[in-house]
Image (tube, one colour):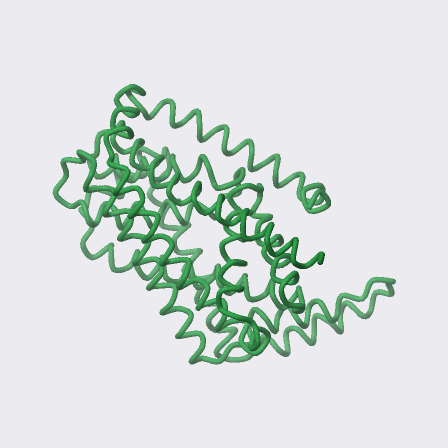
Length: 336
């Protein structure tokens, strides 16, 4: 684990810098910290617990999706064992910077079943891409109902031009379309072969052929039907997570008419913000982007910040505790 951190030291430093900048931005956004704390304390523990239970369901769906992607590789692996690996993976992402938790998830899976690590990494890439596809689909639907003034307020609050926001969204859209095109056409196979032939021209003690081949197998070698299935799974799990956001939001005094659309865009943009490198758990970008989305819909900044912090704690704290426990149990079993 230390080696992974050492190799990604620059990503860690950049992520830490971005998180610190985001914390300063949060200080500027919040008008009154006492009111923010009051809002946090006013939420009944029952709703917080129910919120985590709903999020837990989304992790269950994530496990089904990953099992579809791993396909024959985990044929004899019990679902509960894979579920524990997913939970620990999110725990590591919560505790390690620069999304090093994905590598820790691969390590944990190999404790319970020996699977090609490059192949597994490829399936995780596909997971992330289908997450983006689902969020973009939600975004497209949301744009039908969005108030006209939202984008202008959102860009002003972010101090970014509307053009940059639309360009970023368009870039993500083009990238996801390209990914789907590569899978549907099967063009990834000749591209991989050409890449390996090019690498072979350089004489080296390190031969990456088998790593590249297994990675692309994991990332792209899914049938069109399975691609549809995992995308539907992504839509379902994000719908479940957004419902948790909505449940918690009605406990706050937002005082806006289009609450459902506001929460939808909160969920979309705060999670797309996870693409931005940051410290462990995405602390910083999630809070700033989520708070700015809500204030752009007219929510008071103190209420918006309190809500954003609370839902992030629901996403972060319980699963970190559970994930640590599941990893320790499997790690001890592997050493016996």
